[in-house]
Image (cartoon, rainbow, N blue to C red; front, side):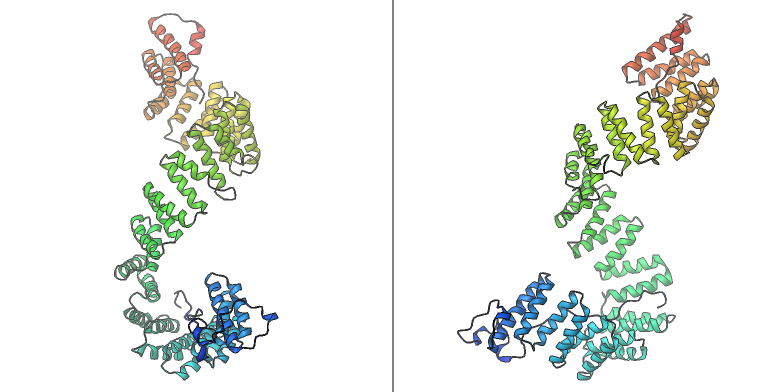
Length: 614
């Protein structure tokens, strides 16, 4: 097939229009339309228990058969295939020679996936009907679907012999010859069909000719494309021919030409199938405006398409057109109210718009059985905190943490909520549970280490941060944390410098990590190097008090008290915490006294180098 995707050439029309149960009886064609032809005493029958009732009146039997047939039609239309089959089988007891009932039974069994029984009833209907064309087409289609091409060929040939002008049967016969790779006979059939001026579906003959030529001679593409052009001339919006031509365009000229080809066709003969192809391409190449235009066409063609509407909503979200996205997501929920995925997106959009109450309400509608439940509850806990109800947020998390959750973030956030309540005991217990459950999670160990530091559990903190680095050797924040902690404790300063430099190499533009390196150098007594690093950090982030304070300490050691005072004043202005402001004020007094030659207590001088932890 020269790399082209092969498609089934045979269309199977199984859901044929069928008449009443007894069309052969001219004097009683329908139990409904010809009711007045029955004797005056005869009424339209209700349900009858056939096993217990002997009915010998032929007219009554046919009426009952018609009634059951019509009832089976209603059940079939409602999607109740099994009920429809049982009603038809009962109807056959009343009218055992009805080809219409047999034909309908064949269709229902096919719809139920029972091919063998479907073919059985189609064969009986074909024989009883006297080899009528519509029943023959059904049986031939079923045989083709069952890959019994010999049987299909026999039936189609019989129909064409009975009526040489039956172009539809001749078309299907050509398709069977194609399946059997009898290409000369297939071409002969398709040419006859395509030359018939009255046949409305001659575009199919041109298309099938193209398929045959493609299989016969994969390299002779011009002949194939010539037939495809004829097919599209006969029916300009014939998608199968358009699609096959598109494959040749892509193969011969590339993807850009393929897209331009479809864009041209869509402009002249717009249709949903092309819109689907173009929208997928535009989405894959981030051309969301163009994709949205095609999706709008698909949405109009199928107003109930959840997937199309969802793609449209996601494009609107990407473009930050949140109000329109909400409208589209609500449209989807009107069609599919149980779609937790769509409800989650709707919640997230409300959250993005800071419509926290609306977002929370939607998150809480997601049921516990949903795969989105845990994440929805995590968001609900976060929003509850924002809305000033942290205790409610904790309750949402307690529903699945720690017993059911496999999400380390849920444990971490729960620990933070406990910490916000100053319930350090439960916060630590939650993270210890997380550490046991997610032993290989660097994130859990990192948060545990930070909490241990806040609780002044220095030994445990160092152990946790070392575990982070063991799991992720270049974890910049853990390297930074350990380096700063050692510097503050005045321990392992060489190792602290190594860790700080590794952290800087990983995060070159992080002023806080540069500050750590500068502070380690200060602790090592390398004041000039420390000043260079801290000046760089201060330029990056001039509004951070601790960096300015560290610079002040360095310049004090370099005997530049004016600069030390300058940066300490900056630190004082930037500090929001009242206690820290007092500490800085005390240091400032010491420096100012030094510049005036006033002696200060040794304790005050020693306190001048104390700083906050990272």
